[in-house]
Length: 212
Image 1 (cartoon, rainbow, N blue to C red):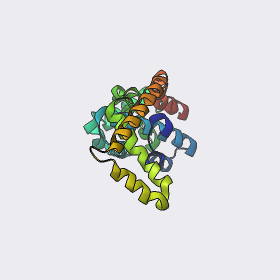
Image 2 (image 1 turned 180 degrees about the vertical axis):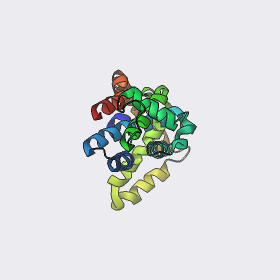
Image 3 (image 1 turned 60 degrees about the vertical axis):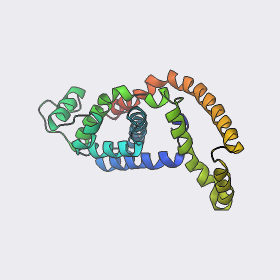
Image 4 (image 1 turned 135 degrees about the vertical axis):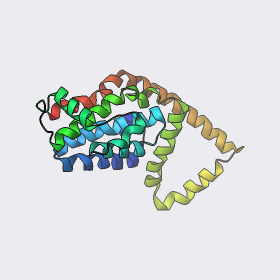
């Protein structure tokens, strides 16, 4: 997932752990929870790209809404009510008409509504990955992994290099040229990603179908 969306592993792992820690206590098997967490993480990234809201905030709102705090996602145009959750569960066939829903059925129905209500954002992270804002976001985010890999020993050298990248310096122009090359490569990768955009966007629905 980190390679697909060009973000740091150190950002993706806590995000998916946060989501999985929501699904497992609600009765989902760990393998299904992991698959659903990945789909929700992808959706959080798409919404981040589409609405320019940090994915951590998006994921936090999603997890809050999934467990019953419906107001948490209203800012994204997602309307969750007890009535709409019941209606979605009946529509999906995961509960008998007019029956009371179990906690797990409510979670599945809420998740389905979240996916449906964010349809306009599906695949946006991949579709706009070569735009400047997303290239810069990706570059800044992947520095987290670089910093971790560098370790304490090489941090002083890295700090010196970063200080050299000041306005007007030759190093800055070299860096800008390198960034342009990276942008071109990202555009090539983006073309491949676009081919699987629909499949990725529908992954959440597929997982929900497999669960039930």
